[in-house]
Length: 410
Image (tube, rainbow, N blue to C red; front, top):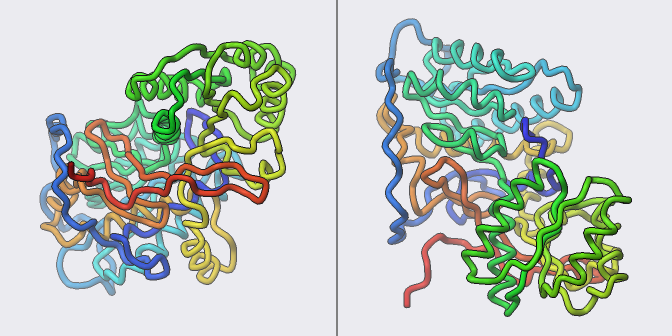
């Protein structure tokens, strides 16, 4: 789902209605209950040279909308991308956005679409088109390069962007990443392992963009947990290349190792670690890439921990989507549902002043089918994730996902 091609697990479609701890089936967006949270102050808001701050006669209007200024939402997705799979994803995300609009029962919302194409200049042109139609918030685009192209166009008009990219570098200055970021998963599982007594950490990271991101998060998380980093090994993403790095990790003296890899390569790494003497003395740790039914029968992963959304959290959204469209949602479709639900939640404010930085960065966050999330001052998102343990009958939650960002008193 971005220019940084990050592999994503099947259950990353778990985000759904922005609802404040309500029944999943209702999918009614709502704010979290206020809590005395005091995060660091955000950076100064980006300056808009030509702000969209009032309704104009030239802006798009359609019959049947509620009286008053419509909530014009620009949606940028790769509808005409060269990849058939990408086009199918865009279509599914658009359906999810429409579903969120209908579920909100807000007759003031007007969804306006533009084509991201294959990214870059096409996305910038799409943003200009939507802004000329009066969009006061942009949902999308999908690719990191597209977000980078859209950002200055939207910033010039003071319009926030709720993007689906996983590239952290494109966040900030009015761009908010509503996607699942691997940094959250790495931090969550490292913090949990440190809390369970692990103190010497190692990492096995693929030589990919995902491995780079996971490695940076690993360094920060180990330091934040006041633990020791004893080894980091990189490997080319193929089965033959994992043996030597795995052997070095097995002999490193670490009592926990993060493996930022899933699928068939993970099935090759875990037995190699066991063969080299790591079995029984080293806790294996993983990211959401491990949230994969095909790994259930991998005996060498038993007892391992990984961070992911709560199991079955997306079932309500998937069922509602199938009822509406007679098909299952694509991966990431629920992110579009989330974004439009969040827009609906904030739509009651003054036109062209409702999607402010303060509103989007509510420190209490928002809750959806995948759990709570909030935006950080740098435009990335923080999510509440569970920690699961691999067991013969399937993953079992050993640390539930939090339901609030409020820290316990005392």
